[in-house]
Amino acid sequence: MDKNIKKKIGILCVCINSMYWEFAKAMIESARIHLLANHDVEYMLWTDMPEEVNYGCKIFPTEAVTWPYPTLLRYTLFLQQEEYLKKFDYLMYVDVDMLFVNTVGDEVLGDGLTMAQHPMYALKRGYIPPYEPNPSSSAYIPRFGQISQDENGKTWFDPLYAAGGFQGGTTESFIKAMKAMKRGIDADLSKNYIAIWNDESHWNKYLSEHPPSVVLSPSYVYPDSMIEEYYNKIWGRTYIPRLITLTKKFSVSSEAGEFLRNELKNM
Ligand code: UDP
Image (tube, protein in one colour):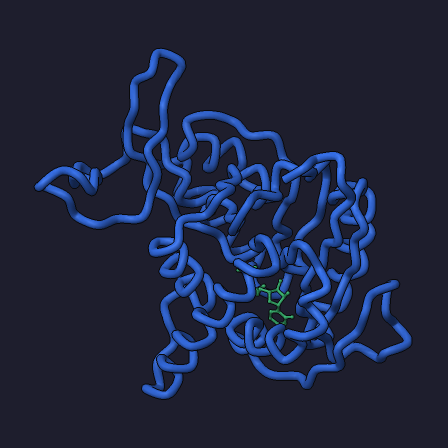
């Protein structure tokens, strides 16, 4: 990508059911400050909010559905506007219950797909199970990951697990991915089945067969809590928060948080 040319970026967001509405305003305001600010960015919201409350976004009115369908059917919704989306150079999806707290710039734009490593599974190297990951070895077992290299030229295999909360790519590659993921989700639904992590499972499956051109660190899906007690320990390092995920009052009770903290103290 030529870094000097302004790109047309389409930001895709789903915001269905009133308890999610409050998140959209803050996320979009923070994105206008921190996200690809040197480009021509348009925000699109598939939502059941009243149309006059649009936060400066292009609104696609959408009917309320219960979880997990707002997240699972995101590609169905986006692809209904395929012709509209084709005017962009890049498409990036952002969960609305997130907040940009630091610059997210051209590093998220590659030649193909962009994924962010899920904070929970961005493990330190010691945690990697010992299957042979190299496709050119006869001991190869297919697993999704990439070969990394340190400053001395030493290489190793890093397993990858992508978060569903921040994803995208060039318009062509992401529309192709969305079509394949929609096919997979619809095929599962026709068998009355939903994958373990909904759309996220299908994103990981697609990426395992179509490697991304950009792999972002957990800085881009950075949890807003338990950093010291939990995540720094899993990561074996710290990351700079850039795009943080917000703990939702309605999905995590204070009792559950307290219980987890006590469990961790005793680990
Ligand atoms: N979402 C929504 N309404 C819902 C549930 C989810 O609009 O009732 C959208 C919203 O953009 C949210 C995304 O789907 O950020 C992902 O869903 P969820 O918050 O359940 O996933 P989590 O962030 O908890 O993994």
